[in-house]
Image (tube, rainbow, N blue to C red; front, side):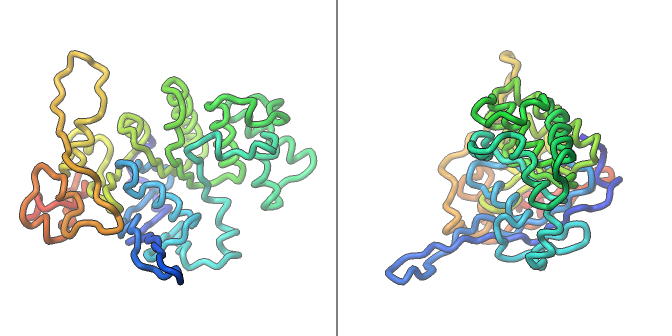
Length: 332
């Protein structure tokens, strides 16, 4: 972690981001419904900050991360990067901005082209943007590999010759090739062994300290997020339910969904007493999200208002930062 967000300028501002996917049916493939994968989320990300994005599978985390980079086209909303709205950019403007925003994918096996050497994979962004050629290209690829803990001679090998952790290092080197300011880490360590996860996390933190990187760190592992993030946003069925500084969130989670997630987090001490908060039922479909608070069908503290009214947005000052909660329990 790299300090408080209040000390740094906003690099990314997301406002009411929405991503809906059409469901087509019938002979003429007409749109019959919409999958509301992301449904109006807002957040800021400061330069040099790490924002963790957590939630159950299918809550919209990955869709949100890719929409921020316009790898998926948002349905509506604003994504302002360094003062400019990415959604309003044309193709040429977006291409000029893309080097400043990169992504590390979840699967280090599927995200690397098996027919390309590691040198070509890491150097592909340099070629695509015409930034290096000849001996300069070779030198930059070698330096990138060495910076992520791989030998420069590995550039002649193919992805199948590496372990999962080494492949993810290759993915990180590729993301660093264009000297970005923002990197979306989409479950970047979830496919790795625990010991390798720690190495990759330490590498990401070292790179952040060295280059001043901002991370949108998407994960389902709360212990990992607690280790690396400055602030954490908790997502449920396409919407945020809580957003707070990491220490505040783990010390005093407010939303019942966050409390249930925390209670399910494994504790390394076998003698520790842990009170689990079981959630009954399944996550509703994003095709037809329930009215009111989307969590009310599983919430152990549900009230009548939760079933019919959207939850209020409660903001509480926490030092120089803010603890945000979307819940009827704290209204008034």
